Length: 237
Image 1 (cartoon, rainbow, N blue to C red):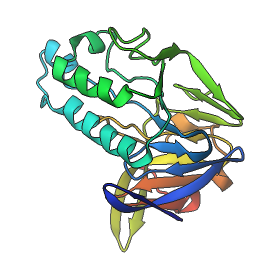
Image 2: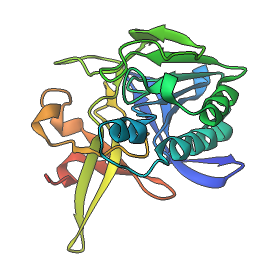
Image 3: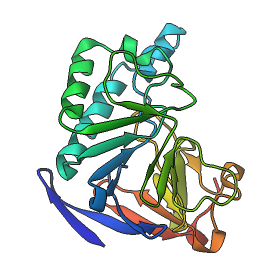
């Protein structure tokens, strides 16, 4: 267990290794690679509320503001030289063009002075309209490969999103479910960072074959810390 200190105070963060590369699981749901000064977030789903509103389903219109606030906090804590957004950064292909100017300016301030990589996702298969940064299908950094959807079977060094992993445990008769990082040390699937995103239990069949079950650990997100939970302790939905 490591302790990070930033403007938001002291927060316990879990240090892990993915294919031998050191990383830090942040309580806000971002991954930080200190050696590369690289911050990774996944599934922001910006403008999800406005996407639903266009189809007649009214959701509270605060998701983009809330997600950008958390993104600003995690960037301020780690001060990365580069940020990788692992796909589904916007909830649909028109999300970036639809984003209100006040949020666009806020995002541009976060992007200023650092490299920014947009990885294409199934919700946003095209580059975000009017925003800078590098648009890529996948990105290799050292022994790691960043992509939106996990590859079937073994994929040493893969860091992916898309599945919105969550974990459930039972403690003292009480069921607790949280979003989580899921890893077996060889690959990692990121939690969804967006404010209006749900989670899928890591024991669901959608995760079948992605992890060595005996090595699976769910790094559950708490309010102020990350809790490593061995796979044997996890419960299905």
